[in-house]
Length: 342
Figure 1 (cartoon, one colour):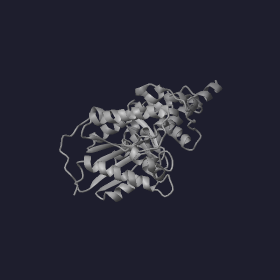
Figure 2 (cartoon, rainbow, N blue to C red; figure 1 turned 90 degrees about the horizontal axis):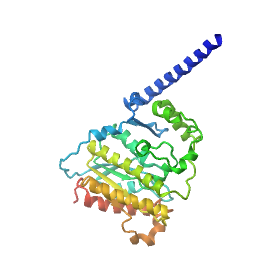
Figure 3 (cartoon, one colour; figure 1 turned 180 degrees about the vertical axis):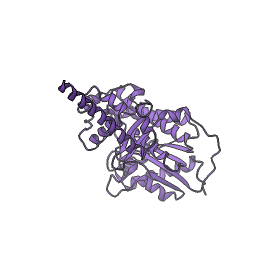
Figure 4 (tube, rainbow, N blue to C red; figure 1 turned 30 degrees about the horizontal axis):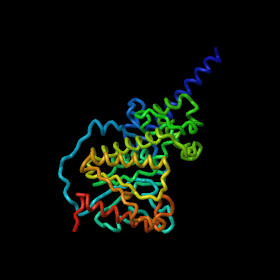
């Protein structure tokens, strides 16, 4: 009997500790975020994502909110002398990945003094994390006039994620995720715990960031289905970013394709063909709001200067950043209704 009572006491202490830790974590997360910290688990639409632990950038939001409350403003855009723009992307937009470099964002502001760009890009960023970053900042800061979305190169990150942002929608497991379940996914409770406990999600993110959980090396051979679903995840995230921007009063949304000197493999060619098809569809669907800046539409003109512009397949030297900034500025001035042209 004594043993049974001790067992019950241990069970009680265990569950009480779990509840207490969860409550403390929710309070801590609520302080820099919003009330969704207390709705997580009860409302299955609420998503939680850690973008950057060092900066405590945490997104916890309800994606359905922007869809059900979608509003489209028909208000005419008046030209402005000065435009505030947010840029999102990976290492190619963050910059400084080659010697003697900067970023095309910085060079663009030097060329066009009528725009101010806040650069939210970071190395390795994919559309999952960029959408979360947009969610975080659009709730806290003054809404920008336009968004530059240059999230083209890191789609492959999803191939090793067991729990990516749109898994519930897509209901698909990528081939390589089987290798990435060593610590938590070996437990059958993993998915359930991640659906209801914020502290478990936070613990998982911490272990991943410090390297105890690692992405596996991506196989060279991936199926066409993997590629299709990889691009589909990008599409869903980008569509959500477009809807979120529109809902909050952003006036223009630019899908930017930076150039590269890839010798496309079959997989790369298939991926980017699907990507180009999508951005064209998005531009047509959101005519006047979504605009495409595709710097790969005429690669022949820079073929002889690739080694001057790029230090590897995608990262730019200073000359490459200046070239891309000039190209983007030229297209932006022609297509945007935000900035007056003298």
